[in-house]
Image (cartoon, rainbow, N blue to C red):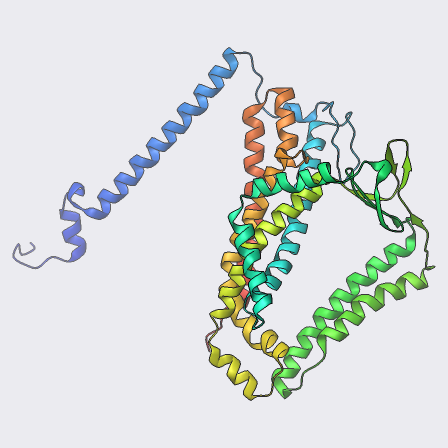
Length: 398
């Protein structure tokens, strides 16, 4: 028989205490109650929505995706007509959003990096111009900037018959920017394959050059060799495959241009507004990241005889990236989400196409759910890639 006066272990003490006096068990009980409450609320809202929709004879589900859309889309990366289904129309909207987001992110990172470095320039004029750009575009709402650039195209540019012709085969009017493109030929596929091969070679050479520099201290001209490969291999492939030079040039026919490739005013205004606005924030992120690197690092690089460009590329930027990447990810996500403002200037992005679909089918809940799912997918994909890159750039403890 156990001695009542014997000391009890912590486990025995917890078992002897009623659960309402045990903070651990009480916390689990409260979490279970909250979870049950959230589940019950969700079920009530879902059931109530279905009942109301059924009462008003409104169809539910995603069966409408297989029906004919019966509306045109002004811009599309794939072939599309009004006879296609709603599913294909929504795919066109997704691709248009991806096009704007991808091009916008690339241009934003390049422009923001240049402005951020210029903000730290010792040249008074360059530094003040960069600072003025940042203050101007940060303080003007992005929607207002979209309206401004859109009005520039439609109010100040001439009609197609009086289009500006700054150079041969290039026209600028209120229908957009039109320019010539090469006539389709197998040589361009060869050139594209050669460009991909050059990208792989540049990546391999860069890794080899870094290891060689760490081992011997000798610097390999990676930039010059990389540019030579990226330009030389595609040109060589194009020349070997026949060197075609035929161009499909835009030409005036009736009241509009035909042929060539055109960038619509809506796309151009959306891209300019998003890039110029977001680049102002990226510039401040780059400036802060560079300034976070101790000045002693720069002095150490100078004492080793490194050139300013080498100091920036080999010493400052690799350390600054660890500070830059997390907030830069947020700005990439902001640009992607701000692209939904395209509906305000008539660009057929995913939100605009979905709104048209909702107006025609009445499937508002399904349409909004699709918008939420698509933008959630975009955001999670961007975050996953940037988190992977951030881990790759993180300091490794030795």
